[in-house]
Length: 114
Length: 111
Image 1: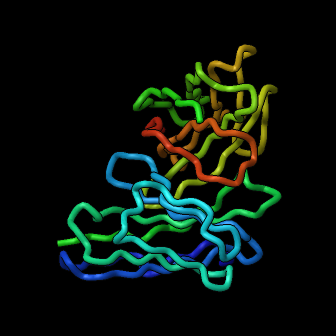
Image 2: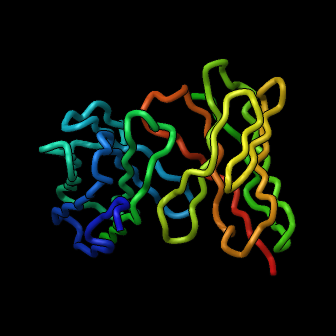
């Protein structure tokens, strides 16, 4: 399967703990996006990379959130000092420059903060 | 990016055409209309997009009104696997940036 993959698929953590999610985009896609989705809502944009450069961050991305894409390939999203409000599905997507109308989404990581 | 308005839910009989409307009355001249769908427990999937002209691909057809203030996504022969949330999004063309998803239309295809 050469689609976007995300790990882990599910994560349960206690409030105050740190968590890290990984996204592996489709190879040769230079754009990578992170979204967050809560129940009954559409995905909300968090941040966006072109190669290793983080070009845009939503105001939803508080200081507790940090994302990296060190070599322009996979990306990680870390949440420090998790809160119950962080419980959501975290989606990753990638796209190629020439076809940026089509973002390919991964299956997501479901985070539950207890 | 312009906002869109979609009905929260719709039903469609299996084998019939599903027509999903979207209003985008404040769309700008350089904004495209995109449609994505999200099947339960999966990430969103691109369906189709267009600027002015009607578009068709193997999944669906997109009909955009002449004034571009509304559009309709047509699934010509709906199957049970088309049950999903459908999102209509308008965005400046090919900026490579994020999509702003609303709450979409939950389509249920009924056997």
